[in-house]
Image (tube, rainbow, N blue to C red; front, side, top):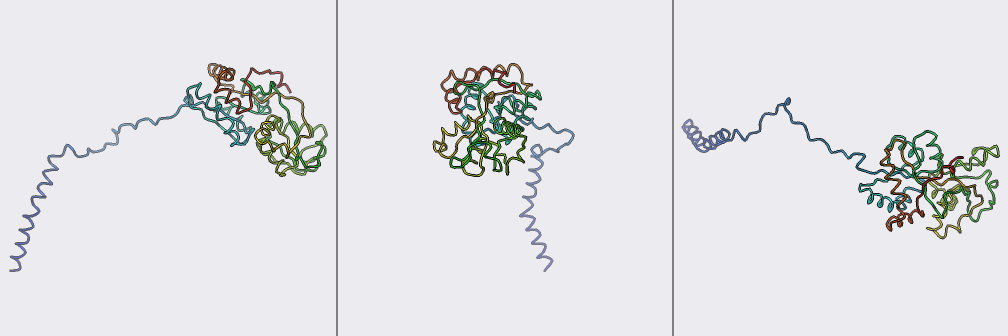
Length: 304
């Protein structure tokens, strides 16, 4: 009886599931052409090439850290937009902490044009890694100075008074922020270590200005043009700092290009900068930098 029962169950199971099994087999047979084909590793199609943005598709403009990064972006953004409009390509603003790093970018041709410090330019032409393109004209002049500044309420009246105090340099390659005060020390037969209690590098002129204004350092050597621009932005700054020493005139920080830049590109950038003041949008960009216009350089100003 038990065996008959098992036989009946097996029979019923076959009746229920046999059509499904047959349908599945039939579907596989009919749909063979739709099944995935076998992957043959020796016959793989190559992947589509990855899209790489060419260096020629972007204009790279380097700006030395004369200002802090935030100050650089605020001041130079209108100019970057103007260049982008004229050239018809995206413009990338390239910043680095030190002047030396910008010089290295120029030596490798990693940027198309750069705004550099005069000291960095002098070092760059010695190594034949860059050439001067144009220079900014500010207040009708193509020169600038190094100013030694102190806090307004301090007792210091001359550079000699800063002996034994804390002093801020800008960058090891800065003309007004390092080379000039170093020359003052050399005339005295001194070094920063022998003359000052302690020295620091701030890596931007506005940082040096703030270091003195906030009492972090007793004195600093800064670019007079940056100081004037800072005073325009912050009218209260003149009440917090004062100038105790002024240098002779130096050639103003120039705009340069890599030595290996093609002549066609060089002419394009030269025309762009020399013509910028003739356009309303260009004048606005210049105004944000405190520049009247760009002119061809007087190379004699850089023979020092």
